[in-house]
Image (cartoon, rainbow, N blue to C red; front, side, top):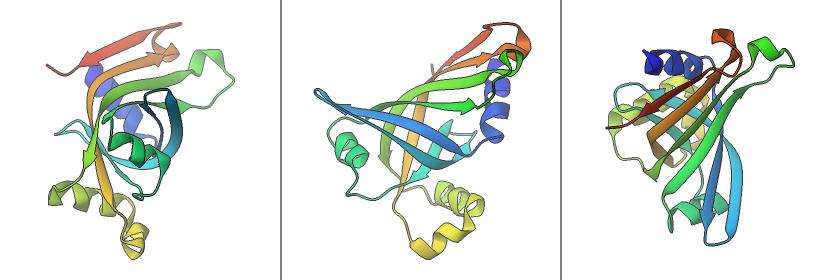
Length: 137
């Protein structure tokens, strides 16, 4: 049940913030995403020459967020996630990304997958500070 509510929130957005690290160096970036419910993963595009990709080549464990921006306390919603970031080879997932962002085909981007291991969803619509947790088995 909680995964359904989390995925409903994910479906309403298209940009995530991603945090990476190598030793004491940190990086945060924003990425457009497609989400796959079967594999519970985000598909993103990024160049090899970015700081976050250089980080994940050394440390594939990442964390991130998706947030609804609102000043109304009762409507606050936000998702935190953790997972592993890898190069994408799955053709089905590549098709999903280009179906979501057809204009990206012209740029021929390198695609990556964030396989999610943990979600924490805060949803004040369910009650102040209500949190739903999902973890991969």
